[in-house]
Image (cartoon, rainbow, N blue to C red; front, side, top):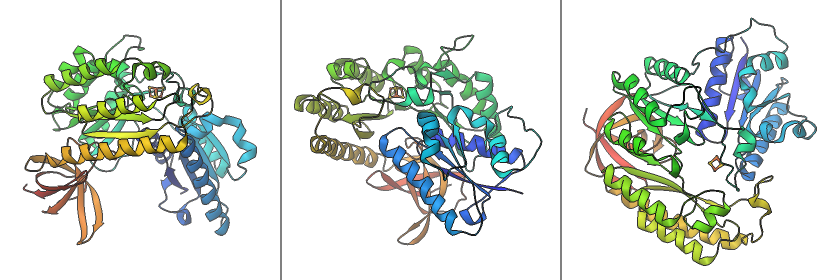
Length: 437
Ligand code: SF4
């Protein structure tokens, strides 16, 4: 049996794509390798969101090629995902180490590509259904791909193409399969989840989808989390659905990028500090106890000291639980990369660091506020700690892979279990929990 080693870079959306390719290959008779030494072929699923992510993807591929060259067997490498989608055929002469390039939109053909590079025959395999292989109790579900917003700093619409919603039936089938396999947390993702359903033949809303998915997971005691909601996507219907549907977590992730009206316009986004304040104030008023995550960008072209302060003050006033901070990066092919008023690198870094310091201060304090609570924790794995191995998990107000974790100080559980914990202490974004049952 031929074995495939997967190396996945980038965001959760790429993890989902890798899961799907893995499942397609397993269904076609391949198995997964744990290391280069065990593998017959390597698949690198790449990220190209920022120039730094593209470089990391290429460096990782070259390092793997070097490891392969040092081994005894020739081992083909297949590069998938965002880097081939963004750079296409330009890569062929640049990366002779790579046996095949597969764009994100071609990943359903992975079985035939692997067979071709390995020169093996096989039955044609079906791509029908919600093929996923997931370990543990938490899974990402991609409800859409692509993006129509064309924020002036972002290359995603050029890489992933125009927005399209996955039909409900496909999402539901995936949820049912995952629930039957033991998954209890369903994290709905896409570039712009708030507009899900608008482009379907029978248009639907995200709120409708959340209510439907909530029903599907009710009998397994599951919970649903939705990420990447643009501010305009927060409709009355969505707010009341999050408030009134117990399975939908009151965890809201709204990337704002900035709050200055002038800069938001230059970013090809909309809104102003006043509008954003009213949105967040309303969310807090209507969904008591909710947790808020956002994203802010420092050093967009033309950002003045006053505008940088405006963003700082906005975040300080809103006291977000979690904030990802990015330095503007002039991405090839985007409008913002060609704009006048590019901010000096050292100024950009200084503004970024000031925001990081603030958001850490806010985030650590928000985390500490949960000490004393009794919560359900999904056990994600085992980690090395000073005292030996410890169980680690996350709870409703921590998105997997993004926020902090709960470190289990006492009690026993297996990976994938959902346990009830008392939160007894915190450090930075992390919490210490004791299992009570
Ligand atoms: S919403 Fe803007 S930042 Fe997000 S993927 Fe679309 S274009 Fe990029």
